[in-house]
Image (cartoon, rainbow, N blue to C red):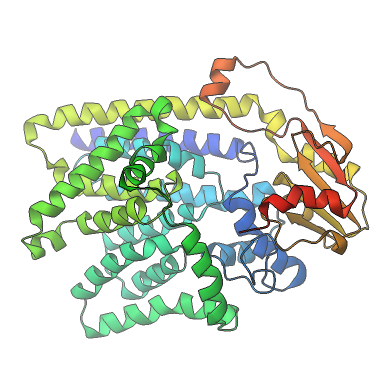
Amino acid sequence: MFERLKYRQNIIFWIFLGIYASFGLYNLETLPVAWTDETMNLDPAIQYGKFHHYFSKLWPNPGAENLFASYPPLIQLWHILWLKFFQPTIFNVRLPFLLMHLCTLYFLFYIFNKKSTLISAVLVILFATDKSVFEMSRSVRIEVIILFLLSLYYYINQYKNSNPVNGLIMGLLAISHLYILPLLGIIGLKTMLKNNTKGNLIFIITASLPAIFSLYFIDFNYSEIFNQLGLQARKHTPDSNGIIQFFTHSFFNRFWPYYFEMPMHFALYLSIFAFNIYCFFKHIKQPKSLFLQNFSLELFAFSATIFFLLTPQYRYLPVFLMLGLLFLRDNDWGIKQTFKPIITTILTLIAVNGIGSFALRHSVAIAQRNERISEPILKFLDSNIPHNKKTLILGESIGEYYAANRKDCDYGLDFHPQHFNFSDYEQVFYLSKNDIPFAKKIAMYCPSKPQIPEVILKFAKGGTYTNTIIWKVETAENFKKITAPFMEY
């Protein structure tokens, strides 16, 4: 009987995963290209594919236009490898990130599944439908890779402690992003204290390989790493006037999108943070107990990093949520047995809240599909921008995918114009939804729009390509009017 019940509870997870994957695949192109990691982290790989040289004019950091070292290299190396086999289209670029995300959910289900399959399914649904998580499921962000590698590490170590594999995963994570390093320090220390000398040697060697290859890839140019990556790190440190503003930004403004859509998720984040602090100080006088407590130090180290050392962006929250749920689950929620049914009910309500938000946002994306898919607007750009001329396209990030397959075309962010000169191009175009009085209007993209109630659009808002205008910038003076306010970085 119990085996039959467990089988049915497994079915809940697999049905959810199937629906989640179907939404993700169908809507893979309905997230319009953003002015963030997608274009900036894709650009070095695109330039490498076009010119076999690792650089990016898109990044404003001095030196990036000659040799790119402004961001840890894992995501760029992934793009370079993937684009060796596939064309740089939106679907092709995003597909492996969705697949990695689905693998993460699979790993988490079996990591959670120690006592109750039903609770495990609820926790995975809660995690998967969190706003910051599902928005990244079809985006091109390093967090997708980080979550995949971390969940893979914990999944493997449930069954076997493999030093070569553990070391390789830690090494890949070490070149993913700087904010993950304190967490890796705790994980690595715990791993090495469990190993013998031979095991530690294997772990250290395999963990070093990704970093060595990355340095080889840029000819061991340490000075560029210090200059470019150092500048990037300084740009991501908190910039607040006073301790009150600092805490307001970190613990409230960071969660601004959650208040109306997912208020229970917001409460869950703060509860995890508070419970982790409580457990830390409860065990601080017993270092061995603190060290052995599953996920406690890992979560504490990561919390200190994202809440106190980095700018308050909610893109860092998926890793926190995953570690937090693992911490709560492995420490038995820190509550008495009599309260567990109440906690289970609350978690289920949070999961239902997430499902509602997820379903509504993705349903709107399906309704707006005609405005959001890329192929029509790329054809629109192709028919209105003359070929066979050295071209620069500024503005809306769909221009990155248009320029990706043309050696005679560069794409630039209008707010990062440091490495672009008007005189280097025969024609310059600016993609914008705003009126540009000093530029020449070429054409406006106006696909048919569905009738969606305004209240739904406000709740499940998302950008589209509708009303994107191609402006031609005909003089260096007008080019300067666009770029001059952003020249200082």
